[in-house]
Length: 476
Image (cartoon, rainbow, N blue to C red; front, side):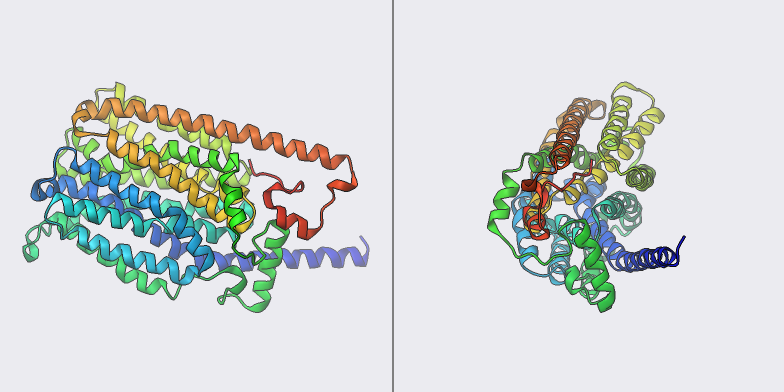
C-alpha cells in the first residue's frame, strides 16, 4: 500500500471515529429525555386501567360502558390534534413545544384524580388526548433530523420501550400508591392520578433545558461537530438541510399510497396495543387473582416486552430489515391470543399474556420508525409520521369500544378474536409495503442502469424530489 493510500485509510478511520463520537453525544442528549417523556405519557394515559380496578368506577358512578367511552374519548382528542401538532412543531421549535405539551398533560392528568362524576372524566380524557397528541410524532420527526435512516429504528425502539416500561412501573406504582387510600381524604385511585401527573409536570420543567432544538441549530454540539453531523445527514437524506414548510408537501403526503399503507399498518397494531395495555389489569384479575396481585402481575409481561423490543430491533437494524420482523412479531402476538382464548389453565393463559405483550410491543416499535426512514422531504415526513399515528389511533378507538364489559366473560374471548383479525390485517399491510417498495427499488435500479442523461440528477434535484428521486432507495 502506497503512502497516499495509507493516509487515505487513516483519514477515513478518523472520520468514522468522529461520526461515532458525535452520534454518542446525540444519543446522550436525545434518548434519555425522550424515553422518559414517553414513559410518562404512556403512564398517564394507561393508569386509568389501574385506577379502575382500584375503585374508581364505583366512586364516580361510572356506567357499565362508561370506562370504554372514556378510553375512546381520549383517542378522539389524540386523533384530532395529531397532524396539527406536528405542523406546529415543524414551524416552531421542539425545545419549547414538546416540554410545553408535557407540562399541559401533567396538569390535566392531576385533574383526573379530582373528577367527581362520569361527565367530568369524559371531558378531562379528551383534553389529555389533545395534549399528548404531539409528543410521539414530534419525537419521531426530531429523530429524523438527527440520525441516518439506518440508525433510526434502534433509537425509536429504545424510545418506544418507554411504553412497555410504563406498563411495568405502572403496576408497581399503582400497588404502592393504592396503599395511600384515605390519606388526605382521598381514595387510592385518586392518588394514582395526582402523584403520577405531578411527577410529569415537574419533569417537564426540567425538560425545557434538555430537549434539543433542530439539528442545524444544536447548541449541545460544537460548531465542528454540528457541521460533521449535517454533512453525514445530507449524504444520507434530506435531514442535513434546513427546509422551509411547504403546503405542497402536505398534499404530497396525503396523495402517497405508501404513506397511507404505513397508517393502516399502525391501525392494525394500534387496536391491539391499546386494548391490551388498558385492559391487561382487568384480564389478569379475571384469571382469579385479587386486585393487588393483578396490579403486580402486569409487571412481568411488560418487562418481557421491553426486552423483546430491544433485542428484536437490534437484530433488525443489524440486517437492515423491518418487514419480516414485523410479520414475525404479529404471529407471536396471535399465538398469545390463541392461548388466552383456548386454554383453561390460568398458568397457560398468563403465558399467553406474555407472548401477546412481546409481539404487540415489538411490532409497534418496528413499524413506527418505518415512515421516518422512508419518507423524504421534511414537511412530507412530518405529516406522514403524524398521519400514521392519526389513522392508527382510530384502531385504538375501536379497541376501546369493542372490549365492553358485556363481553368480558371468558377473558374477552370475542374481542380477542377480533384482535387476531386486526393483526392479520397488519400482516397484509406489511406485505403490501414490502412488495411495493422492493418493486420500486428494482424499477429505479433498472432505469439508472441505462445510463441515460434524463435520469441524472443534481444534488438540488435529489433533495427537492425527496423519496420520489430516482436515486432514493426504500428501507425494507
